[in-house]
Image (cartoon, rainbow over all chains, first blue to last red; front, top):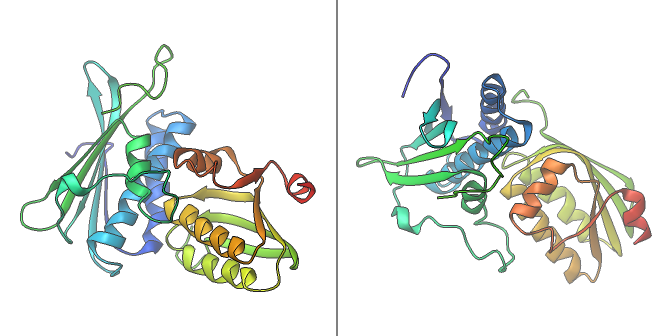
Length: 153
Length: 116
């Protein structure tokens, strides 16, 4: 997953990195012709994914490595889009345990996964070998004849 | 934004018991500790109502809205209330995605919040 125009960032598990990562994905998406609302959602998804890694993958320890890869994709059915990979080297959890929670139970925490699943079209967590997790999330650009919020997976 | 720049600015234009606090900047995991300390400190004083002017907030994530949930609980424990005012559309959408727009009282402006 590397080509001209792709974005590759190696980040530290430090909250100070979040703003830079958000602005990097927003700049990338703007350069690739994404609409303003979708750019905001991509930045939000990246932020939430990195925040979860910092909080849960590395238990708040700064200085650990996170890799962010962003590339343009073109699906024959869904058209142009973006694939975002977030790779960490922290704790592993069963992907089936990574789920959003009941929003009627109002409390802080646990909202990040729900937000990611809400704003992206597909979200897949896997264990990355013996160390860390890999999150791959995709979003497709809306066509003029296509209503938003369709075909969530 | 540079690493040294404060991600969120907090300014109180009207003190308790009917406080008006203006937030600006970006609210994320980095800014949450400062935000939490400032706002929870305010909530522990004599308070009837706090209006949180968020018109200058350009970004908020789940750690930011989670902090506001904690603040609301603390304020209500003190038998006071909180009103969020002036949310920009992209900030409001985060409250909508998490359905917290139903949990908070949200006003279009500080004036509307003060009149409520």
